[in-house]
Amino acid sequence: MPFRLYIDKERCKGCALCVSACVRGVLRMTKQLNARGQHYPEARNPGACTACRRCTAICPDAAIEIEKADASVTDTPAKKES
Ligand code: SF4
Ligand code: SF4
Image (cartoon, rainbow, N blue to C red; front, side):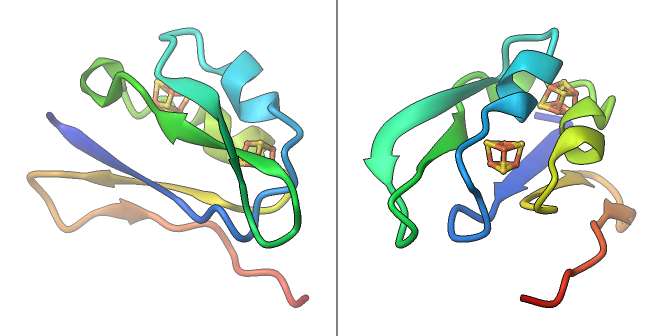
């Protein structure tokens, strides 16, 4: 797997924009709820991720990070004050 996805489920508000944005079908919403009472996404097919970062760009809560598995380069979204 060339990339790792990190989803901070507690930052997620369950909008599912990331699922719609991923043309590779990597993400899907889970049936589990976070502490905010919202469903959050998971990587059902992480091997298909191309690190296009559409999901990180569209997420309004900066809840997704993509990291290259074989390098130290990380796409870390800016943390928002809550
Ligand atoms: S980086 Fe691109 S391919 Fe990977 S999960 Fe996000 S939208 Fe899908
Ligand atoms: S776009 Fe962000 S806030 Fe919306 S479901 Fe995906 S991870 Fe959660």
